[in-house]
Length: 324
Image (tube, rainbow, N blue to C red; front, top):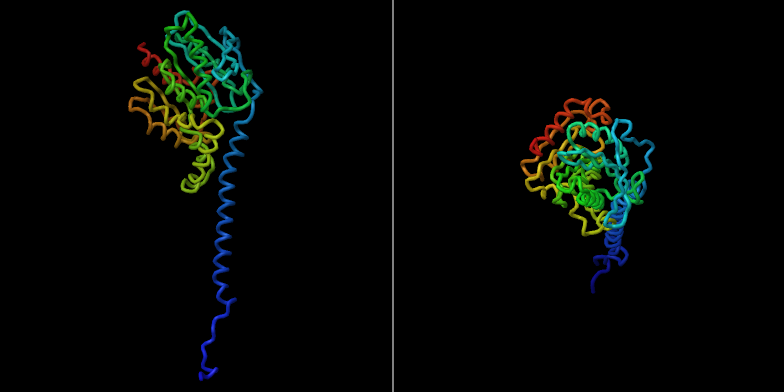
């Protein structure tokens, strides 16, 4: 008979369960944190983008052609999705081209481009200033972040095609910030546009969203697929490719000028670098030092001719591109 004193004690049931229970608790905690992280990553682009986009922008200040000594005609445009847009035409009897002006996400109104229209009219250009959807006197309750505004530009192009004075006149898409991004998207999708000028454009909404988070790229990039998923759900999966860095590839041999300030804090400079990386090699670029999102120096956006470097660069590009 075995001596009870020499028996090896058996592990109790409770002792055997402790490691497994701890593992289950650990897995549960990690899983719970993962779910919380997933919820946060999903919620951030929804909350931030809705705050930016789900609104109608009412401008505190607008401008008129009269202030610049030019006449303008109020024009109504209708988009393919049924929105009525406000636009302002500045005519020229023998135009070299007609310039479609587009402005930013929340400011300024496109009527701030009347100074550009007056300056370019002196050099032979007509203009059509288009207040994009959900801005000012244009209809709409949601900013399209470049995905939907291409329909606004198409409405402008269709209007010019029906106008007897502009049916055979070259078209220039000229935009700032969101307008710059929209000008690129519209040019890529609209063969009737002949020349592109884009100021301070983002390369895609997810790019500017991630860059604006202020986090190191590896951490911020985790957010990118969630931003893309939300915008695809909000604006349609069929519009996922309507981003400037994708559409700039469709320029073909059409002239384009991309302009950005190196220190831009609203649309960081890496958007410009991405656009250049995706653009055809003939696309011209101009980088201004400083942080001027509006590009024109010394607050001269309303009178662009006062910035000699800007005026010479833009006018030289336009005239050269159109054979003048």
